[in-house]
Amino acid sequence: MFVFKPTKTLEGKSCQATLYHSKMGQIAHITGQQGGLLLQDFPHLEAELLAHIAACTHPKPQDALILGGFNTEIAFELLRHENLKVDFVQEEGVLLEELKDFLPHFASLQSNPNFKQYPKILDLEVKKYDLIFALNTLNAHQIDGLQRMLGTEGILIASTPSPLVEPTAFKQSVQELAPHFSVLMPFLNPYAPLPTSYLFASKQAHPLADMILQKIDMLEGLSHYNEEIHTAAFAQPQRLHQEHLGLFKN
Image (cartoon, rainbow, N blue to C red; front, top):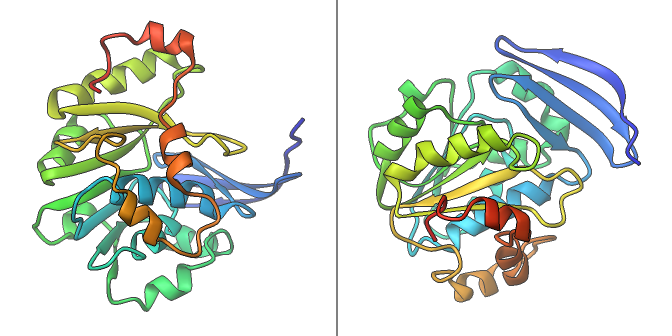
C-alpha cells in the first residue's frame, strides 16, 4: 500500500505542485491546467517510454515539441536520436526551476544547442513538427491547432484521462482526436508504479507495424525502454478492448 505524506507546496501562476514523501521516494503532484506526476526516483520511466515510442516509430524525426507539462527528461531522451531538435513550452519557468530535483538532466539541457525553451506556444517559430508530446489533456480546439502543426508523417503523443477511472472523459478524448488521424491507439507504461494513460495519434505510422528495430537496438544507456516494453505498452485488458470496439484506429 502506498502512503503519501505532503512535505511542501510550490505555487505557480496557473498550477500548483504538492511534494509528497512515499515508499517510492519523492513525488510531485501537479494540479491545475498542467496536472501530472513527477517521480524523483523514477524520472526515466515516462521519459524513455514516450520519447522512444514516438522516435522509434517515425522514420526520420527532426523536430519535436513538448508542451503541457514539466517533464524535460522527455527532451533528454529525444536528443539521443541523431539530428533531432526539441522545443519545450512552459510558461511556469519559476515552478519548473523549483522542480529541477525531479529532472536530473535539466541543467545539461539548458546548455544543449538542440534544446530550446519557450514560455508560450505563440513564441515558437512557424514550422512543422514530426513529433508532438502533449502532457496535459487536450480540448478539441487544442487538438485542431496541434494537428495542423504536424508534418505529413507526424505523431502526437497525448495524455488522456484514465479509461478505468474516467471512462466518459477518456472516450471523449478519443472521439475528438479521431477525425484528424489515421492511426489512434491507447497505451500506458506497463511497469510504472503510478501509470498514466496516453494516446498514440499518427498521420501515417503504426506504433507496432512500423516500429523500427534498428533504432531501438542502437539506443544505449537506457534503464527502461526496449522492444518488449514498446510492444507491451499497447496491450489492452479484454474488458476494455470489448468496450472500445470501433473506437480506435489500428
